[in-house]
Length: 499
Image 1 (cartoon, rainbow, N blue to C red):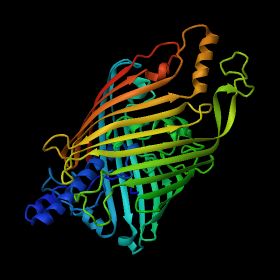
Image 2: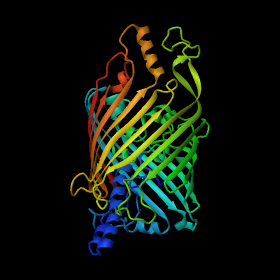
Image 3: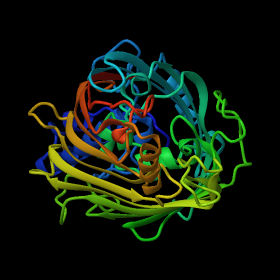
Image 4: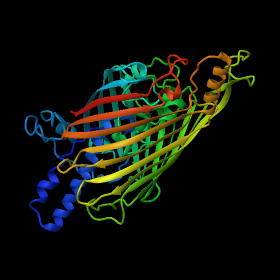
């Protein structure tokens, strides 16, 4: 899988050419345009939500590359704001080098409930350098990637909300840090590839392509690994050293497996630079099977009618071999809330989760047009004794090209659900009983989001967003367990510019 990169394609080139061609060829070119439209919508969404980048769309991407635009011409129709950068991009491209940059900025405001009302700004600059070894040195099948993040602004969820479902996928501690640094080598006519180095696994594992449309973090890197993996797991803005192997078993079935350092922060929790390459905190093992249906065959244009609508289905499992503290029981078997407790949590060997993801297009009136409706669902579970979250789930519906003339827009509504582990719930209940006073007992939390992505130009996306959280904090104020936390309502706007 290639890293998060902005789109460098000329979306309208097939349409311009189609208008001058015979009908059979026109239909094929229109199919190419549909593929570009689909991938453009995803490219627009990818840098917007770095921890939600899709590994594969429900529609295939033909990856038809356009020539870079001139520096000062066609600024509103080119695929990137800076075009060819005065010839720099085309010069580097001759040697297999690609340079991409995006800036995502947003203003989100909590208008009711939570910790307090008010709004905050936060932003993310992503810079990615890629190298194709075939073009660079004649080495076939090799890809090198290095990416860096500059995170700025203030996190709404931390200071204003207090919710488990955090409002934005780019929220993180302010810093400039290395994100990914890896080399990938393909074999057997690209049916197998191996990636080694510093990796952020949310770029390939547990991904729902339709869910990437949304702003809330939990539609990207889900709630369960966010809270149950050490340091939130090797996902944006973190990464970890590891090896990932991917193989195409059949044209429809793909397998991924990887082993990574168990804690991306490791022995340096203040690792803000991302350069603490750690291998001293156990291991994280993860595997996933991906089954794609009704995808175009090799060389087949997307616009040609298929036997059915495309979809992708995934199942996976991860295991971390470190030790994990029990969330409610001490090492003598008493509740940690009991005044007689030793205060030392019972220790468990290892942690694990099973998950499933589905992306399915359910309506497309014309295969030559971008308009379509897709649905997604993702669910995962983990043991309730050693984890804050024992179940998390996402579901939603996304419409692409919702209005005539708005072929690159997307609108969606989604639901994110988090259930706390039974030992967390029991600990809160015991705390309330022993204290004899008010005390919030955590159960579950649900966030509802409605969003619209408006493609202003090929390089600029505006996104309006609404989020409402039910039973905020899962029933407990994180700053004061004895005080209630009202449901939250977030209104916001995000802008993403691809340079």
